[in-house]
Image (tube, rainbow, N blue to C red; front, side):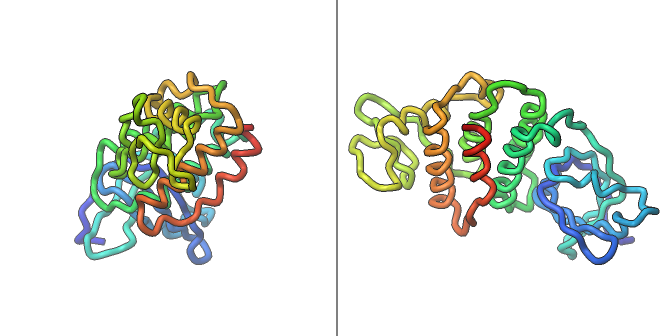
Length: 245
């Protein structure tokens, strides 16, 4: 690694897998370089200065890393926990929402370049979830709609008396309702519009009926599939239907 450049960056852990007997590969969304994969040699051995718990999903880290354009796997020189969570790991509602958010981000963000606005959106979101105690049920919906903006397919807020039906493929409100999975009915469209207008730090003010939350989540995942080529199936959302209903 003698020819590699050393950089400081903040990072958000999205996913990690065991590698060999004592190592990990961690996939981290970084402020400086976008999505990066890090080989953490020997981190699972008793003598390691770094601990595997630092690389749990959604951990917010301060990192000193080596960066080489010639390698797929990068290396970490130093790492510290930037913002410890108080209840994200122990509150089953929050941990279930966090699991869904992690999977959504992991499967939708593949950018290997710096995107400070997106990084800031993610970095500020998870402490917000950690600190909130009430009205969590709409958090993941408001987040998913907000994330669309940074992924390049922000839904158009053009709802009016003459445009009352949100068309998922077009990403905008239309005058005519077309029956089928890609067009929201009038009630669904009203709530989808409310999601678009709710800022992340105001999510708890949006109280959506339980049955409608499930419908909106399914429509949102379809929206992602329509606008992100190759977007894979999300598996972690099913538990949210039970926990947040």
